[in-house]
Length: 86
Image (cartoon, rainbow, N blue to C red; front, side):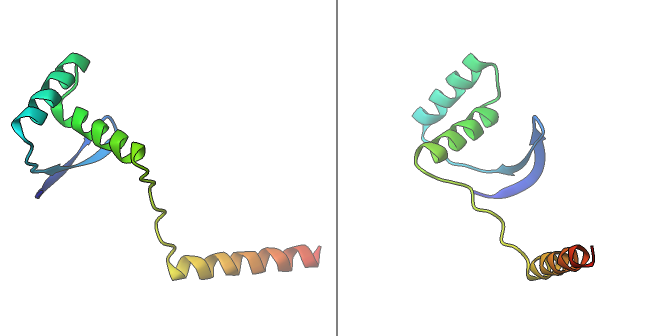
């Protein structure tokens, strides 16, 4: 799978990739996409998302940057000080 560029599909960020599919799978995808009135790319994207969810994939939260953690700690301390002052 190779990265070729970026774009959007209905407001979602996309990346151009090169995939290899067996001819039967591609034919199914083409027919299904046509039946739904969408592009093969959009249909495959939706199918991949559904399959990932079906098989138990859950998106990971982005790791919190250390600076963000210290900012949060500073904010909490400042709010505590303000409450103490009345």
